[in-house]
Image (cartoon, rainbow, N blue to C red):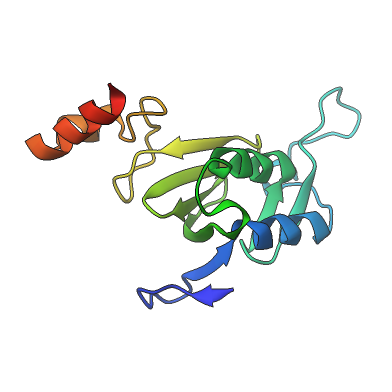
Length: 151
């Protein structure tokens, strides 16, 4: 784990491989979001989860595996450098280069988010990396670049 290049307090940088190793060797625990509402007699079980020292919370295995799948085509591979943008009670926002992801702590989902910092809206599709709100606010040059990559 390394310090973020921006020098932001607590903004640690780690690789995808380090995150996978951290989650796979962490203690198996029930996600915080389910502690008060899950009954072991229910037919449905929360996703298998482990405590992550890198993320500072309990994270479902399927969320980290989905993140690995989303980054599998990236040039970084297992050495892709990640950082935590925000940590909430139900979601961890992670950043890889300009791509942003939301890891669901209760459902195990991994959603690619709008590239506008601080926005939690999902991207329109794999080729358009902005939500509808921020796509409308792009300048002409950026809009042409998005259109070219989409075409």
